[in-house]
Length: 152
Length: 384
Image 1 (cartoon, each protein chain N blue to C red):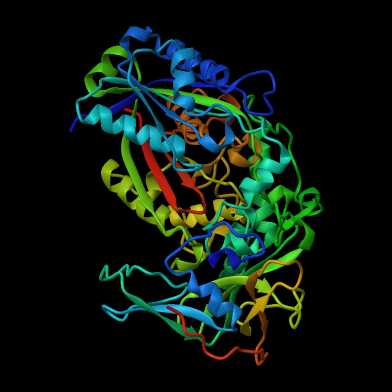
Image 2 (cartoon, chains in turn green, red):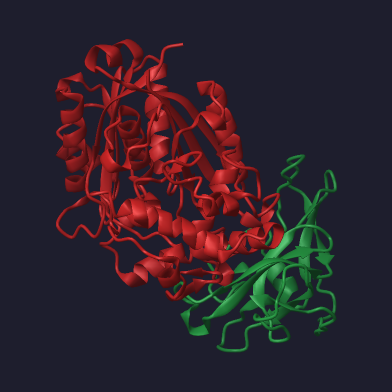
């Protein structure tokens, strides 16, 4: 299911593929190592600290601050139709950073490093196949969450 | 400990070389280096080829280069660490010599980048970052450095004008280098009006893809002294890495791999940053040169903008940086760049650079970065 992640996806198979399923259900997931409790975002199956290969997903609030950003005019293949777009790095409240697109609730012209923001799970509306991603929106933005999924 | 000396250097013209194949480009640099060293092929024990494979139609490019240079059956191998491949080739040649396996090794960096269709280039550009979590949002190579630039501006008050001052300096010197792709001076006023790429960068903040090759002949201590009147010594070879994901770095105002690699190289060569008279740094984007001043210890972290404002990186300043035009004006054939940097430093230390000569250049340095700082090689060169 990891092929769901991204407008253009480069990685179909991974041990953390349920990340994309959770994202479709409206949940942003990191991982916690079952061996030593090491927590990280994005999730990873294999602990870099204790080398355990046992982990569980843990939900992140998506709250954070703008760490840096750039408005991209020169876009690579697969992104030219949405250029210019703004890529934002968010420092997450629970630790770690992610990169995502600036959402409609914020304006690239007034965006500033340090702004409080909300990461929001999204489903790409165009086309037949499922595509999921997330946007960086105004703090306080809400979205729909599906009932908790039971994943193998 | 025995030293490793550079006994010959060669460099072709960088640019859109629609007149030559990658092996023909390699031949130009190799021929010059062998002539410079005044040795026959029979003196060589091995070659190391630096090239980034995904740009060439020919797979396993070392094979065609080795044949075209008439070096069969000598051993060869390819090194690849993105834009730092050339320095990796020098490092492995240094290791081969210091291990006692080989006495004389040719290092050839070569790249043909302009054969690719624009569509292929744009597709490759979209996979420069970590592809699982980052490239899915259309991150690009200039985009990553642009995010460093915005963070540097936020933390230290660095300005886009200071970044363009780097471009202005490198074009000033590039205009005086016959091997450079862009041999034209520019002004900051003209640069700031160029097309936007990824904010705050415009076209003049970015280096350009190019075709080209450079070659160095390395030899072990006593052999170097026997073969050359004035070998230049590669006394410090530092190398360090940082996370592939730029998100996992401790900060976005410098390259931890560059800080660590320079520490190693200074220690090995028994020098400090203050001893460096001339440096070639990896200015793939203007902010990268400003961060290099800081990461290499030429100035404090955060003072890189002021360093270029005060013209401390011009000849006559504290340390002359990229006085061959840098990646910015000379062009960036990625496999060749590290070797091209070493070519310039060796010639500076020999005193052969004419109007671009740095006075009293006795210690020089190359700072060659792969990707967005995932790999950095810092090499320190000395003359006797």
